[in-house]
Length: 87
Image 1 (cartoon, rainbow, N blue to C red):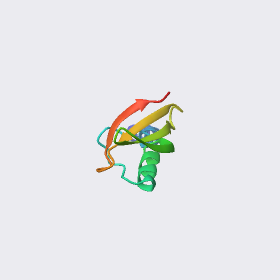
Image 2 (image 1 turned 120 degrees about the vertical axis):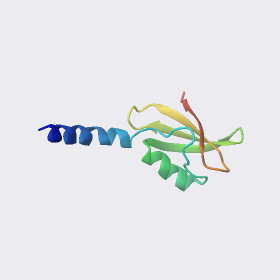
Image 3 (image 1 turned 45 degrees about the vertical axis):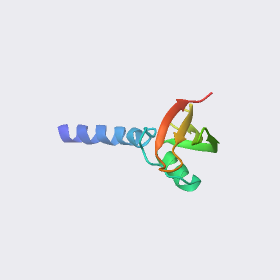
Image 4 (image 1 turned 90 degrees about the vertical axis):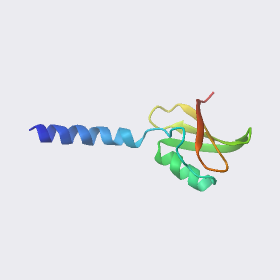
């Protein structure tokens, strides 16, 4: 009975873990195709990219909360530098 309960809880929480937002330091890529794929896999639906202050800004929506998020990416390494709640 305990095993069934544990498996059920694990199955219910796994989809939520799969939709976690990207974190500072995550590598998402330096080109739009790679960055879009990585961000969307992390639960951030990309609407647009733009250059801002020497960084790449990805404007996206958190698929879990429907909130706008700005993800700042290092154009040389593809690493997430900063996350901000959008306007």
